[in-house]
Amino acid sequence: MECNVLIDRMLGLGNDLLALLYPVSCLVCGDRLSDESYLCSYCGDYAFELSNKDRNEASEGMVLPDWITMQEALWEFDKGGYLQDILHHVKYSGLANLGVTLGEKLGYKLLKNPFMRITDETVLLPVPLHPSRQRKRGYNQSALIARGIAEVTVAHIADQGAMKRVINTRTQTGLNARSRKENLSGAFLVTDAAAFLDRAVIIVDDVITTGATAIEIAGQIRGLVKEIGIATIARA
Ligand SMILES: [Zn+2]
Image (cartoon, rainbow, N blue to C red; front, side):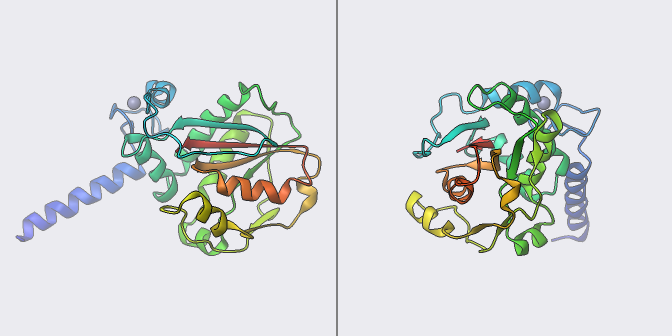
């Protein structure tokens, strides 16, 4: 490869990185943005409703126990589509504001959900990351989403130490429903029961697929809480 071609490529890469860190265009439609919300107001309001309208990539059979009273998601997962890209950015690119922005949108949707009323007694429980994974990633994407929800509702976020992930489980990707359940068994531990006692708790995650993660967590707090709901950005 010629030297100037290499330099060109490196500059291109630098620009991509810069665009990611300081976005000037909407992640969905590419329109120019005036603030740092990552999505233009049109896409922010409508992009999620348009996604996967045929539901042809929808759930591989999520079955939640009936004692989970509410399950809400911002959008249906579009495999290979732009929403998948956005979610990837939230999880791996360190776009903290994007996680919070999406959380706010989810929060507005939760306010309209008829199955669970959010009050100032409602506790948001972001799915904990194992400390070693959180150190590596630098942040917990579920906590960013919960922050967004808390900003537009009266719900509170559970203290970070109230529940811990004590086993660094392997990724759930590629596992079937049964293996997902086994993989997560014993992964979470309540360390501050008072944080959940008699509260309505909403478990917050980026994606729900079979529901194995949320159900495992819900099982740990079930005996303490008044009510349990699940809120995620996407439903796969
Ligand atoms: Zn847009």
